[in-house]
Image (cartoon, rainbow, N blue to C red; front, side, top):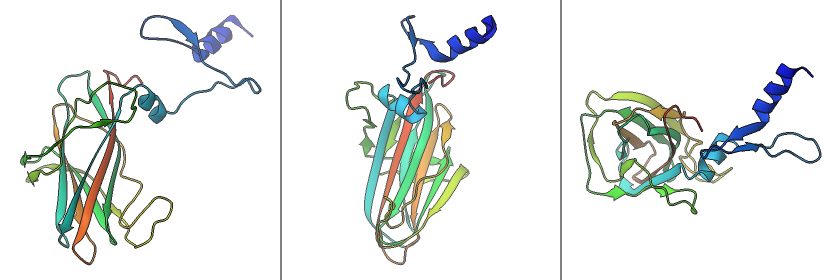
Length: 204
């Protein structure tokens, strides 16, 4: 093995922590393969992963329920929207993501939950779960339709789905997550969000 290949191997199997100490990555004792966590596990263990949700009953056919998400200011608070899911009891649910709505007012603030229950870190994101929204000229970023039904299979209930695409959200920006009831009757509608918050450059 050449000196340059040894250096490349060393760079792959070690890392420097935030205090400047160097560590080798753990390896499997049998195969010698490097053990590593997924991106989602890494953010979870570091206390950077958060969740929020909201539920509203008696939403009429083709009516909707909105949650407002306000991202923090500054270049050291990147928000990685990892999962958006919606449910409608017994029917189809359409989820839409809007950026910079004309107006978004609320009287119910939701404190985001850190999914690492050992962590004391708090989210810089503001969540409002009873928002009054005028979309206006907002940019529609995404839309997903989650199929209906009355049974639960593979953790996907009626009007539920695995979620829309992931996004890195702009800073100091208002987003609206809207769940439309596309079922055949007035129904309970719910939205669940999961995101991670990273420093500049999204290095983790």
